[in-house]
Image (cartoon, rainbow, N blue to C red; front, side, top):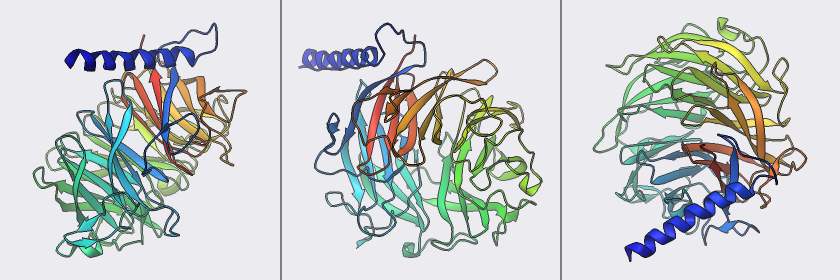
Length: 451
């Protein structure tokens, strides 16, 4: 029995390695960081692995992975209420060869277990979910009307759910300044020890970062303060225009800095974190237009910034946006940021790679490569770009893999799975996952060259 399982495992590993080799044109030699297509999982897509009778990936918004690496969680916010696509959160078991298999889901999709508070079923309460984080044995998804917590089993599957901020929570106090659906696309980040969760809530020309203290046993969250602009009840930061639009929240590995990305006009705000209390203090920002008195970068790469990723060493922060990927050099002592260049087609950037909108960005665990999920304005193509990282953090274009852009990028084979680019997940040195958002929803797995 053990020998058979071991044989199957090595067969899968060999198959993945063969897929990486076959992904390169004849005569080409893969370099460290290059990626090759392994497989796509989706629903009834020719060339893809069929996900099963239930597909909870349509409108996938965010993904995270459990600390031990055995499970990937994906939240899909649905289509906003028209009824054609329901929201859900799903769990995927990660095998030794990094392949993912759907093991369960909760939400409004037929075939998923319903979300509920107590005995009250609320199938649509994950609508517009835009962020998901994993902490201990719990997973949290943020929507414009709630932070929804999920307990997981020892094996990683979703077990039960509970509500931590919502009109339907009953005993849970409302967060200062927030009312359901007034702010949108809340972005979350959680500390490595799982003690503190931070949520950026933005909308209606105001925005703030909320500090929520987490109970490791129950998973419940308690309000521990907020800081922002024009948000009643929160400590003001003394500037306006940098937190009013949704974007991303990224914590440094040392836990000393939190960076908030604002999409309009495009900014990154730096909050210094007290390691003892978890409280935040705003200490600086970089903005596309100088909004709020922020430093202004030399190019337009931060325009409409969307997502960000920090290197494991903490020396660089990379921000994705419609015009490319911007490099912000980080002081590893105090966390301060300084503009250091950009790659893409925004004015002033190093013009290289596909001329498309960068939807997300991820950094490889070894810090040698940065990857971007990109698509064109009409969603006719979608690709993952490989950006090689120099010792000082600057980026050079190293190729792309995807669909619909054969003159420039190696093609994966399946179609209709990457041309609505979504989140990227780089959980280990060997693998990269790219999520397709719509219309079917998909996860495409790439093997990463490590030597």
